[in-house]
Image 1 (cartoon, rainbow, N blue to C red):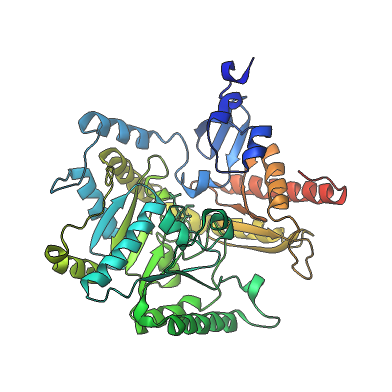
Image 2 (image 1 turned 120 degrees about the vertical axis):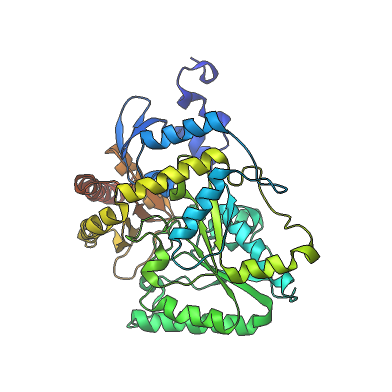
Length: 459
Ligand code: PMP
């Protein structure tokens, strides 16, 4: 049949403009996932895969979770849609905000709802700007992210992201966005430099950056507790203990991006708890609804809120909000997800099984392709290199990672290569058997990739 008439959506997938190599996508077509159950997803031919990255770090509670579906259905029948503009509100959004403030890792004052992680970070950027306008210092507007950090893809959050692949072809970053060092000790530490010394060097570099730009021009510093989409980069020991006092010293707001780390992924409800972070704002998304519906939020502390509130009459309305901010169905599903995180003791499951996953991750550290094996909680990654001794990357960035990802997929495990770092982030309901299967398949896939490279096979 001609693609347009085909019964298989896979053959008709060309109607979508995908986020990938457009020509490769056209040539090879997508993997068409039609259904999920627990940690498994199934393609159109019924082939089963472990979803080893929780479908972009979101479906933490697994697929086909009836309680989440029922919560959505009940809310759809009661009040399917309403907004929070001009003194309107509705109970589910209020209840969700209360619940979030109740579990926030540090005292937070208010919740602003959005639909995606990018929008949550855009909102935090605007709040930082509004805050400094409210405080009568309109020149304090620069925003610092980090090389390797991922904060989203909109024009502002994409500027904050520190990945060349999201910048170069889109004329980003915008002015006012700066990037501090990437915290990968393995990649950027000097020979013989300890993690603690590396952390101290990065803090000194950050202070130099702040002084060079002028602290009076810098509004906020954004960081993920552990960098996720940038390739699972765990901060060096002591890093945040040195960074946070600098931000306080120069009156720079700290925003923790918990979009991946939040809701149990690191073995605590929030990554902030693992690293002792005391942010002024926290961005959350993905796991908030276990990925079942789009919803995100920024939690802000009283310092931000009070300044904004005191000025609101003078500055006019807080002119920022989305049609679907706090959408009732999304809020209802998120509330149910919060119940399930507790009932299933998700944090406990991650704490119990993280040692199993991390031991599995490390069991492949000696593989000839693996430069560094790393992770924490239910995040793991293998940075693949062309030379283990020199850490030299591959000449064609991302290709070997993709080869390894495909070998995993062929063996029934969906993982995600970020550049040449193959990564896993199992659903937080995964069992020891699921983890063992993921690790076994990664081992086979790395062997197969290695054999391909030795035979000169590429994709
Ligand atoms: N922040 C982090 C840490 C993320 O990992 C992501 C998405 N991978 C985002 C923000 C952006 O979220 P979204 O894709 O929902 O806009």
